[in-house]
Image 1 (cartoon, each protein chain N blue to C red):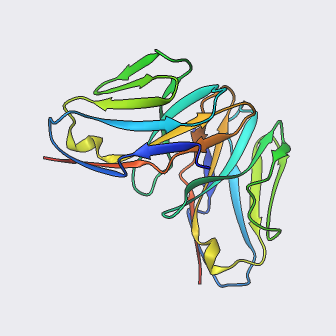
Image 2 (cartoon, chains in turn purple, yellow):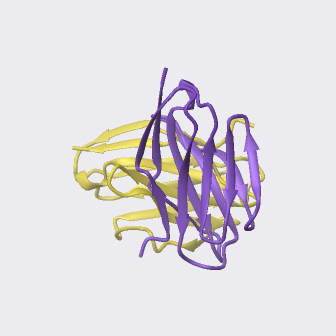
Length: 109
Length: 111
């Protein structure tokens, strides 16, 4: 059973068109939920950690939010340089991270 | 800090050959992870170490895969013998708190 599900798989936005990416998780006992950005040919780059429902984190045009079942990554007025794959990962008890398959974001000038 | 350093960046090998991937974690980080990334399956955890000790290797696909961490600053992932289905990008990550930091990966192609 999938523990982390991301949607949509791919998203194309016009520059300046705000949207949200979703990450849902199915198991209780969450220790942390993480958002990463991955550019082609590179390793995932850490963006945010969220620990509890109701928490929010912001960085430039990105804002991550967390509920008891899912997280959203809101992108406000995106620019072409925001194009990347955004990965969500969760940590339950233990030390392991479980990653979703990612959302590939393309921002068109 | 230079971050997590992986070598080689690219590896092309023939089926049946032994392949060794290398990782130098961030200094001071006490956990190290090996992941494999493919288009079909995304990022899969293969094994992780805590304080140089393997804690969970349930993600290692077969006995052909083995990993070692002889000290806090070095780890290897070995595939012997390699097969075409092992072709993927292999990432190493390290952490000391909850956040993990990734290397640039090794792109392995087995022909």
